[in-house]
Amino acid sequence: MKVLSTTRPHGGVRGANLSRSSKFFAGPFGRIFRALPPADFGASDVASVDALKALAKAMTSQPDKADPKDGPDSEESGIPSAFTYFGQFIDHDLTFDPSSSLQKQNDPDALVDFRTPQFDLDNLYGRGPDDQPYIYDIKGKSFVLGPELTGAPQVNSGALGLQRNNETPARALIGDPRNDENVIVSQFQGLMQRFHNRIVDENPTWSFSQVQQAVRFHYQWVLLHDFLPTIVSAGVLDDVLPKAADGALVIEERNLRFFRFRDAAFMPLEFSAAAYRFGHSMVRPGYRLNDGVPLLPEGHRAKDDTLLPIFKHGEHAHDLRGFQAPLSPWAIDWRRFIDLEPMAYGGPIDNPDPAIAGNRNRLQLAYKIDTSLVSPLGVLPASVAIDPSVLALRNLERGWRMRLPSGQDVARAMGLIPLTDAQIVIGKFIGAAAGDGDVPVPAGSFATFAGGAFADNCPLWAYCLAETVEIDVVVKTLDGPQTIKTRQLGPVGGRIVAETFVGLLLADSSSYVSLNPLWTPAYMQNGVFGLRELIAAALKFQIKP
Image 1 (cartoon, rainbow, N blue to C red):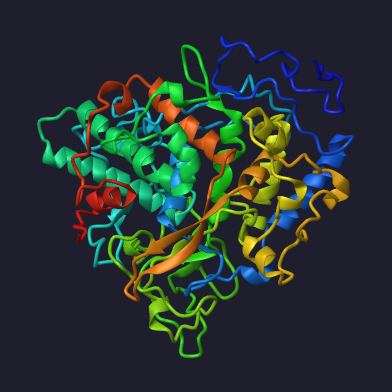
Image 2: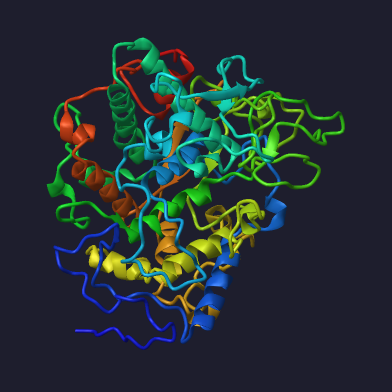
């Protein structure tokens, strides 16, 4: 039996030398693979951080890839961009750890999750109308919304911003401040508030708790029936969520092979600090919110053009950072973020020519889930950054300080043959396939990269991104069906995410899975209820068959 040293250069994390293999162990945060040794990437803290810095740099796109694009490009997947920010919203529902700091040696067993490890929308409802009455109206049933937003009359004519205080910049008065981190997630927060208010209006005799339960049940349904199938490969998901003969999902604890708990569910560190951070690779450099201000004749963008970078770049006067009120013409045309109806596909791949009208009127697709992040995430602005300001490094360093095992060790513990170092590609997968020199770590060289620090020792987050599975997704557009290569989470990352989702719902005595497993959504359209239908319900938009 391998004994872990308690005299590491770190000084060690308190409790890291204690066994977590007992089935009686549980806590706010915990581990799925408690007996696996932690991964280190050097003989000292300095050496490990240096290796992680090199990997983070390799995972972040070069500056020439930073410009927002109107047209299709080779990094797009077939997944609508709304899933990127819905995934962020889900994360805020599950975890909130304000006391954690990368500058300290965090004790994973002492971390406090200020969010319940349940899909209960406490990021939306906060502490409820009794404890946070300023979020709700005088009756304590409906959310108070903010000023009108314009610019998307076709589908979002009733758009309202979030209620905010009178400070400068104006901060949102909502259940979780992180749901104001960027313009897109803040408007999704507003959609969820509008969905709640619609149920209040249509069911005037219901109590607040009845409305809240209905919203939660619809949200939980989307998680199982749409979000997981979109981001987890079918071969993995079918094992965790098999289907009965009538097509209904079989949601049972016996299908969970690794996420086990006793008495109460915990938040797995393998999920929160690694596998679920896949969404960072899906972020585009910028987005078009609505029709907005047209391009200038020379092809340059007007400074208030609504194809906005996630952070300021070039001539743009504005960007999509949050914690401030958006401009009033910035209502999101949600057709550009999810397939409420067919939109244009645009011009040729990697051709954002503004002369191609379809490039301005198109469904914007998330980037592929791979080991590449767009360059604006490599230098986060002060308003959203903590040290380190490089998002990839923040993820890698957090997983290391949380003492997570390597991706290969987790694969072996799952009974899988892990990826070889030669199979681990760092950077844009499209570049590796084309051999065009756009890969910062040449294919087949991961074993020797950073002095061999990652040989058979890939950080779990990077491993989950490297093992994604490619499928073809058909997207309906005004230009006809488009088949797009899309990557989904594979055997390790997909299993961790799927089992955590299903396990948390099974452990929650107030989820629809526990209270009424035969429940079906009231706001189905054409026999379906997913993220698209949830957004449509909030907008009161009818989707055509």
